[in-house]
Image (tube, rainbow, N blue to C red; front, side, top):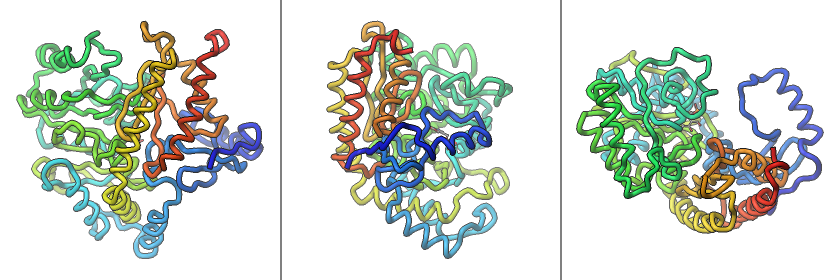
Length: 447
Ligand SMILES: Cc1ncc(COP(=O)(O)O)c(C=O)c1O
């Protein structure tokens, strides 16, 4: 099957919805093209005018099992008839407990874990930061440039992705400091990995710890193993082992934000597993319940030692979402993780060739089905080519491929995890043709 676009985009019905949306929906949302979804099946999604698109973003890395997966539909139908809600903060129900037990089992390291459930990624991050502060009795949190952790005030304080996210929201939560992320393609220290000997980690000790904050006042570092909104940038191999040595020296907790990279997206349950390090706290959301709202903060049992009343959420751990999450994990355990890892390796190898072929393709990186492509005007200067990146995203849409930007000048490839090899390469072919076409445009034609 291929995408099918019947006429001009947006179509007639889409235009009607767009004008209503403009009237009633918050203008703070960041829509990059006018796609008005009606229904989906597998990796195919149809707009209100009946055009068929290939989903290369999975509703921003959420629809791990694609659209209308039979296991998801069955789990929803079964649970919704029994119990739709019963606030796990005040009562008990099996779905939440079953999922907590399962998450504890699949978490990196020992099975000794406790789970706090939320409804979103930002709330999972809030819970993680609050827990770290509560447990350590320390005020500061260290986060990283380029990191995105959500938009509620605590999560936003750690977010340092784009200034628009923070502008006019001062005062944020006091006590967050930032340090350079190991973005090796654009090393902030102009060094090369591995010869750099992790200068970005030395910087923390030599500058932040000695000039800004005493490490004994730092509760936790919060970091994405692969930066998501920042541009799909994986930390280099060995980075987390080195970082953990520093953290252990000062009894600082490691919070990994796996809201985007977790739940099978990289071919492992958690992206941190690629780095062979055991975090103290993990924040997850997005793909965990295949499109239903759910987030979780997973912590070592000894760390999650806060007493009743310290933190809770009326809707967190909804039983329908929990039942769907159990199905997602079942699928991942029954071959989906291997599928993502194998397919990811194959497609990344293929895409890597584009670095040689196209002057505008600066860097291709990723793990599993979390792949970033960074566009530059010139390979030597690495000047960012945001205009061409935007044109590529728009042209893909016009050809029926739903792809999203990431960072200033990258795109992200994050299709549903159940995508078949043939379907993936249909999208890759479209992307190739679009990059080829846009590469040949001069910048003056390309504002
Ligand atoms: C790594 C990461 N953390 C946190 C969030 C916030 O999640 P939510 O939008 O569900 O609040 C996101 C969302 O994109 C994310 O990618």
